[in-house]
Amino acid sequence: MSEFQTSPGMRDILVPDSARVRAVVDAFAAAAEGAGYELIVTPLLEDAGVFERVGEATEVVEKQMYRFTDLGGRDVALRPEFTAAIGRAFVQHRPPTPWKVWTSGSNFRYERPQRGRYRQFEQVDAEVLGSDDPLVDVEMIALGWRFLAALGLRQVTLLLNSLGELAERAAYVDALRQHFGAHAATLSEASVATLARNPLRVLDSKRPEDQELIAAAPSIEQFYGPASAAHLDVVRDGLDLLGIPYTVAPRLVRGLDYYVRTTFEYAGGTLDSAQNALGGGGRYDGLVEALGGPSTPGIGLAIGVDRTLLACDDEGVFAAPASVVDVFVVDTTGGAAALTICDDVRSAGLRADRAFDHRSMKSQMKAADRSGAAIAVIVGSDEAAAGTAVMRSLHDGGAQRVVARADLVSHLTAELKAPRR
Ligand code: AMP
Image (tube, rainbow, N blue to C red; front, side):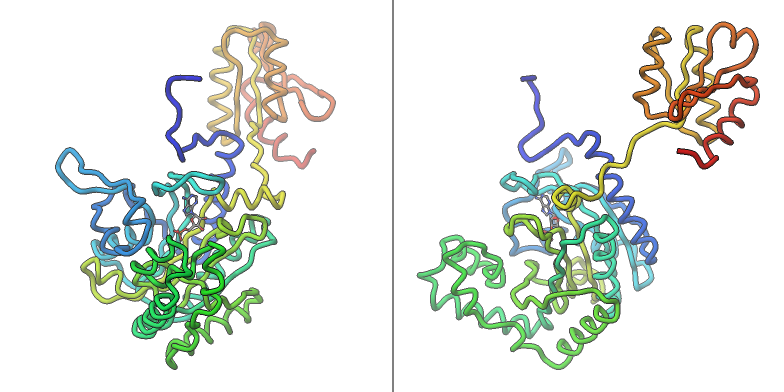
């Protein structure tokens, strides 16, 4: 074993997985930009206060942040999530609203590593700040749903809930505190601790000994006022209109204190139930205010790329995009011809590779086959002297012809554009 290995919960991602990660991000980018979301890129490192302010009572912030003092004495943290960072950016730049943004990248949480749970993981994310319209909720839920479907996933369930307005939610939290508090003796130790911090989160417990009490807990629906009930109705009608199936899940909660009204989750049908959330999101109020901005409603969506790919593996969909070049240049005259030909071919927008180290013709032809290229361009001493090159098809029987070096790129372009294979 080599002296240095990746840290626990951190991974090198090599092909084909690296290509799949990028392809997932590309698919999300296409979906988000196709719906008018602009790309935002925020720093990996923020003032720790950004996350602390927003997620005071959450485990992520309390126990899992990579937080340290930098050389300038600043209290900083690697971002554990995007929403707070994007809220900070909103306050800093004050863009016109509604502000629709998407992003992707690594987040860091000091978790217990296991399948689908890492200390550095990739998310794609979308946020809309400055609109209260329930149709924004529908648009965002549909964005995630269509994106997962576009990857080929068919066994995803959409769970939908509303946490009510802030006051309704607070009344519900009180009711939960009373309910669980009265039966604390039968709760798991972990849930007793959670109860003290954030009673809503007890509903998230997967421990068997908690399930009976959770099932008997009051339901949020009893606490909705007319406005939040109406908001939820519009969201449901919108999803129905789009033909997106969902299950109302009154026990679905989001941890942060600022989450109100709509919450949703995409559950992967093939994953272990403790780790089956591919992603989710919800509305938040008060987050922008907590970060020093004007009162601004918002809604966000985050989907884990790693876990989404595990679900794709389970369903046998979204294979790695093939990494192939169009042209492989075989040069037995020393390698300089391959240098200029590759450069010309690449400048014309085609993908080209070559061999190095003065390999034999046979070895270079093998490399050409392995490269997946459709055409090998071969230059030996005769071609070099005559100012020509051989174009040989690698896919259909090895047909070949000699072309003038000056016309090579246009021949390649024409050949590769022609419908073949
Ligand atoms: P959250 O930001 O906690 O709502 O998480 C949103 C999604 O990000 C989850 O559904 C997961 O797919 C993914 N995710 C969160 N934490 C991790 C982690 N530690 N490792 C891998 N994926 C994660």
